[in-house]
Image (cartoon, rainbow, N blue to C red):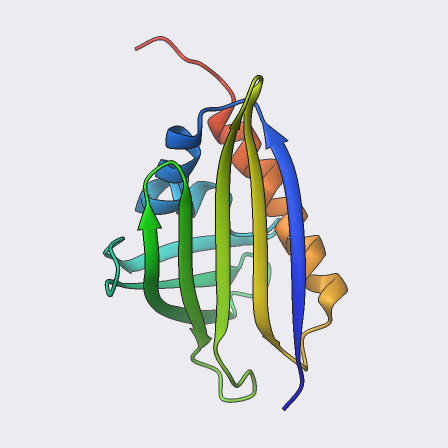
Length: 148
């Protein structure tokens, strides 16, 4: 069954540690990961190699929900995160692997994301669009330096 791969790159004005935390904190994930028009719920998150994660997105207009989850393969705080994803929907078969690399640069962090094994029925353009919206929300969450 053919699958797709996408690669994204952003430079974000936040530390690698802060961005890593945004990927491993359930409340943060609900704030930035769901693309526009969706809400998110984290059902499980144990960010360590072999740990599991589980989440669902709900379409705010229709109320339709889809859930997915997987396992963490690599967890290097502030450096790298690699995890699998499987949709509960049998029409979206297969296992995806997402790798996020956090590279410190003079103005913040260079974030590199690769998602492999995207089910053939999901257009790569839709994945890019969703990730672009999510990364915009990630920047809005992580870039401000707010006083305590």
